[in-house]
Length: 383
Ligand SMILES: NC(=O)c1ccc[n+]([C@@H]2O[C@H](COP(=O)([O-])OP(=O)(O)OC[C@H]3O[C@@H](n4cnc5c(N)ncnc54)[C@H](OP(=O)(O)O)[C@@H]3O)[C@@H](O)[C@H]2O)c1
Image 1 (cartoon, rainbow, N blue to C red):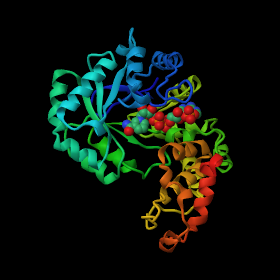
Image 2: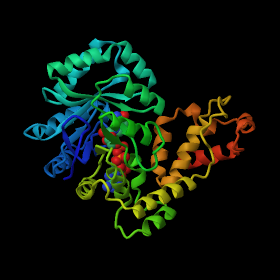
Image 3: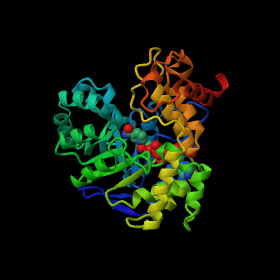
Image 4: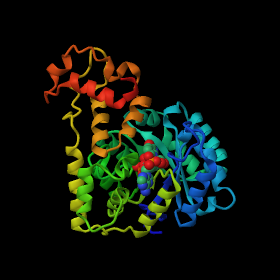
């Protein structure tokens, strides 16, 4: 296993960390973790030198932390740095912070958390938690030894990221979404560099865009670009090596779902290193990025001029899901999101064809027709 410096903490972490958000489950219920398989996967990774495990209050409908507690009992806890997160959206007082942390220590069967994060920070949660003086509370808990390092995970715009990063001078680390397609998304490359420059360890989440960058085979046009390289890497390995190549990346978290993925990603981490990618490799990634962007059929820029729709259709989000399905060759990811994260009243079949949106769209997109196409693709059985 390769190990990397974790910002200014003095800690060395394995290049690959295990994200506990996508464990194998029995059937459709995300709370029904396949414990036997998940245990084998986690132990296999730790036995190979992986030393960072990332979970959260909410994962697997709150069954993630109790599972991790059981899986690490009997000697594995001492071999890893354990990270978990305060469920910020449920916090209304310092008493809540206290209650969650204590419950997490119990669930995780440990007397301390190594890396404690404010989960999924954005502008609204930042405002709420600063009002509740979260830093006074956190410094007290750190002094008591209940956790050792303090950080935040992030989902909002760069401007908000900079506000949070510069709004407290004792952050140890942060966790951001970053991959070769999301270079200018949320914190992005700029946020990553700013955090590293301030001495924070930077943990990367969604390195494979939740699996979209790992589709194998990828869309044909993408496969053709990868085939130009003598490297025998899978699409997943290309995405991971692109991250490890960057010195400002401290750790890449992967939410592995099968034993095979664990084996492949451990082997990739073993081969990894800053400077591994040569100019020709970086060109391949650049080309793949351009080809994927070119595969998006709807030229929507998410400017939102089309909103509000008089009938509340979520036009830009629907177009983004449809475009992603084409860019990544992963229709199931988009269909899952459309099924589970969209209210029926915001779906494309609610369009009444009034045309208000089309008169406002600066890209002159034929929105009404594209909504019909997107709906029948994203919800095939019911269209
Ligand atoms: N703090 C936050 O707000 C937040 C948000 C998101 C994630 N996270 C954390 O970050 C971790 C990593 O993010 P992520 O789970 O989205 O990671 P990811 O690596 O982008 O996606 C994981 C998915 O990629 C696929 N995959 C992984 N390795 C593969 C391989 N070798 N070959 C083919 N497919 C592979 C699997 O999808 P299939 O099973 O579909 O094949 C797997 O479920 C999470 O587990 C969680 O711990 C935190």
